[in-house]
Image (cartoon, rainbow, N blue to C red):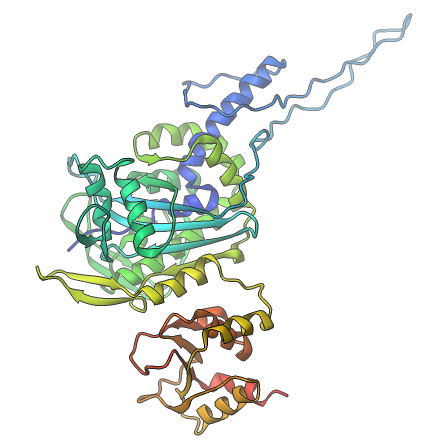
Length: 482
């Protein structure tokens, strides 16, 4: 199948709740600022077109009036003292995001091809949840594979990418995006209240407007895709050399969509790489101030290419909140082969059956990493899980599993078994969680000095225990430390 998957609007959202939409609404703000400033005596050249978006946020006047010098009686008329230059703050009057609760937004990219006339309804090629914690100033981005086999509310089992088309075709309350959001909630346990849906045009238009000089991407390995989908139902060849390079909008879209390696999982990782690069690029060229300057063009270009249930005030407020979140506080996750089982339907279709416990671990790592918990807090939570733990040597270092088991025992951790993996890969130490006992995995990682990403779901059937520590040679310095 040649169904394209593309990140498209996610980069824009993480920067300021979908760059395109924020650009559109930012223009509304700029227009209102101009009106208010004009009432205070500041003159602006009127735009060629006026746009009427309702409701328009109410902004206070920002123009300063210069004070003229008062001449002294009987003396020559004093020259007026120049007053301060009027300055418009693009963010002036935008309300802060005051709701302390986590907000989850579902990003949907529909399979609408520009080269053919298709009325829809459309399936989604991309489903990504962006979760923002306003209090901790953190965000998580989770990519959902299109072939995930789930129960669609009101319908039978099906691929998750059909939820949007089913919702639109059946007049589901709120349409396709609402049914897609409810499907995510019921199957993944992620409540979603807001959505943004876009077609293929949004990504190209926004990148061309806000990053006309291109975006730098570091390609880890050469890509040669002879079956890249064109605007219709044909294919073209796309190639990328390994190394860092600047890509224009079209090439950036190709990099995000290519199925090189025949894996939607790898494509999701490339999409998240594009997301980071877009965020860095847009923030480096002026943030929201630059959006306002570019907004009229984006408004014209993007009209009819997106749908959202975010209000203007919510977009603007959430956009400012997103700008306050540093890059290191944004976590990324992909529901890949570690979190699903491959299966074949009765009709012969290949699908992905979610592994509920594993996905629970991933969602927690991406949306609520709890990095600020102390070691004693983690230990208390781990002890409550009463997990069985084994240690397996995944290196050529003889006796490493036994050394690690003894080291853990000396710190109060009960290890039920030590041994060796059948074929050691000599990779770094990882902790595999087989039964959803997440806190034990997190506690062991903290105790061993491993980063959070070294805790992953067990998907190899190595053990019936709850936790397996696969130790590599990298653990030796920790074991020998006093």
